[in-house]
Image (cartoon, rainbow, N blue to C red; front, side, top):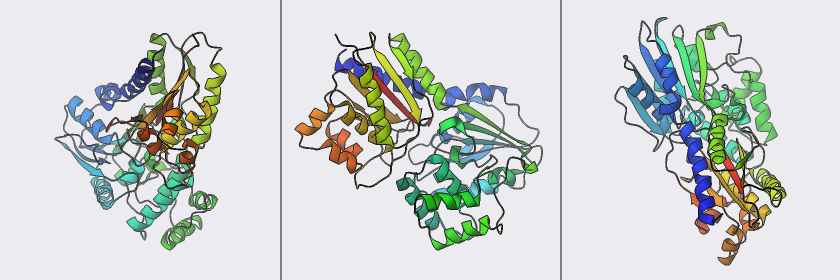
Length: 427
């Protein structure tokens, strides 16, 4: 297989995964079955896919509605009846804080005949940044930055975020009572836990203040004094906990996951098989240090070289972590891929792609990258040391150097990371 053909196949697989999670497509059957309420319909939401979700609702549901949705800068859509606000991600800003406050206000004072339609996707945790009483946005920003660098997984990060928020961890649904609350979620988390997606603003919360404190201690994060005081007060019972699964005030709340990483991987697998490839599916919920997982997957691919009689594609998803020790420009997908590139060590039969389905790997406007059998050689020819770049968490610089960054622009969806390895049999 020629290099150009291998690259094209990997990109086709990624595009198939994205297409399976497009809001207009995955929401269509749910919109078609949605019956209008006797009262008002209030559409709210947050996340990188939320504006596209709002656009799909507007385009496909002819009944009266109004609302407000907050998405990442550059991820907006032109809506007529639902206001779209763009704010910062992954570190929240004042625009997101103000939008979250307005969303909370919109659901207060509703009647039992009203419907709150909540559209949540990955990124909502940062975009719905409404600090709990006594905390400032600066407090939340500092903790968020520390968590992003710590190596904490998404569940751990969101345990902390929920307990510093006035809106997450089910509090938004409580505020909307007695209205009916229907949430449509696009999952970007391992195992599709609704309580973790966007920190679960309309979902009962199983985590506690004490667990939030334990996360900070585990990763040696010293939070601002107001944050520590708030969490300790909650753990001591002086602040009300987030609503738990048995909470009676959540009995009129329904949550449906409309798109998942697994469905996107299955769509990519179908394309691979249609091109004559054998598919090895490793799962949609893989976690761990990105560089270590990348190296482990490279070893698996090397084991297949010489044994496979047909082109073979290894697919996986999930959300790895990066413990930031260097000063480079990185994200978990390029960290994974650089670890894989180094371990593959120029094997002539292996290509790979890793990218975030939201189009943003880390804080860069770059989705991820592609590696080829000659990636290492091309970087060395330009005078760079790949291992040193990995130690500096400088994956984006590595793949930019050799011209193999994957730039999609805003995808307006988010079903977590997509990873594909192509093994071509020896000729």
